[in-house]
Image 1 (cartoon, helix red, strand yellow):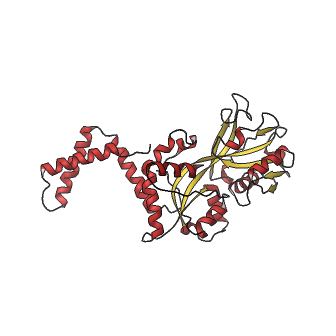
Image 2: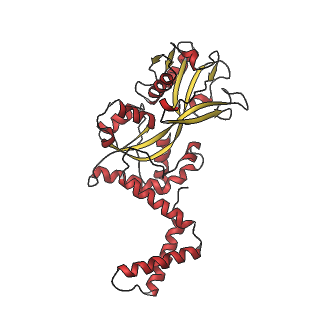
Image 3: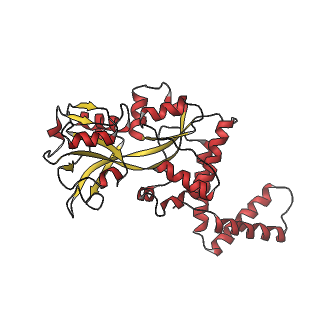
Length: 323
């Protein structure tokens, strides 16, 4: 859904056409980015990204991909029979985790291993897994998606529940505390109640192209269109998760696309200037002009300086700022 909403936004306001592909998530999304022709971008969870690097599934991954931006957190949903009270009850049970090496698979392994719980992973698409859960063929389903998730909103009021997921930080370094409440899934959670769970960050990745290549220029063109318009994604009817989105957020130990770093810095500058009073803006510009005159041959005339300042004020007032 995130990819679809980005594509829709840029098509309407930037005239840029993006073709979105429904991937299977996890390692397959990274494999598509690395090996499929004409795939420029991929959305992957941080937990998946770190596990693939640590397990060396794709050698030297941290040199072969670069991130464009963090997106938003997605919550872990553990859906089970209402007869199951907690994760410990699922020891030795059959759990649907989505596609093999997908985001749900990686997260299930991390969460259950951190609690020393053994389970049998079953690899189905999520629609099939939920049907199997309802029919008693599975004992739980683990998925990772930004709440509210459409496939859970219309589930029946009885027979199923969401389980709390504890955060074992030493064994789950890429997760953060989160919660899901009755307003998200009124059919699964009683009014006024909430479920503690964990969440993981989603990341928008690109191949780490050299800057003088055609493919890098394609990614750079996307960034130039996307970053100034990103704030519009926070408007309805887009997914409420966009309210968490911050283009300035950085990802430790991973390379960022140079065009993304530069675009994010421009937005920070625009934000700072947009918050200046007219008097502060004039003072800062005058000081800059004085320093610039020292460095360049010849003086800038007063009329030229005034025109530059007025043009600058127009740029500040029309710059799209992500906040």
